[in-house]
Image (cartoon, rainbow over all chains, first blue to last red; front, side, top):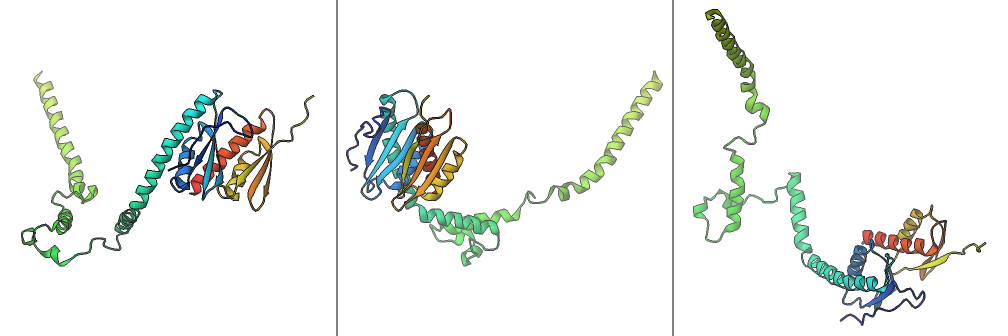
Length: 190
Length: 75
């Protein structure tokens, strides 16, 4: 447990806006303390002192003209933020390998040189022949189906509509010619 | 006439702040204060003499905050 955190007036300055918090670094790592302190930089002046192995002293001085009440509130919020950052660090440590793997796979996949999902023997087997619970293989087959492109999504726009766009002006001319003929007939009737 | 301020000294513990971040922070406040950095084995001392209309303590506090944010960026 963290050592007793007491809101005391700064012994040197006696400033009522300043409080000091003593934290045990074995519970709250230095990284978490930096992170929590960073959150409060816009509202308070934060200064770190003490021994990073035994006892870290955090001085928090409110930026507002309001006195100790404000600083005390900041202290409570700071302690909450410490817990928040400690947990975030724990989770980050726990998922470090997975995160590295995902990032690595994404980068390798984007480069296109290396196949992140190498073709295995099961890729040539139809889904019915797959053993029960072979979900990974099924997903590989699913990813392969997009290559078929039945709706020609991968075909460039120019290639897809090149012939149509060339014919289009001619068709437009025909329709406009018809319209002009109709109008001339109408005028003649009149 | 009030005597000219001799400024205040801020001590940054080397276990929490590194010299580079303190130097970088001090650089940002050059136009607001006269700053003198002295590096020793135990810590980094910065003497702050603020220019008018700023106070020494204000600049010192801002310097501390800036150095801390620099350290957070490093970490």
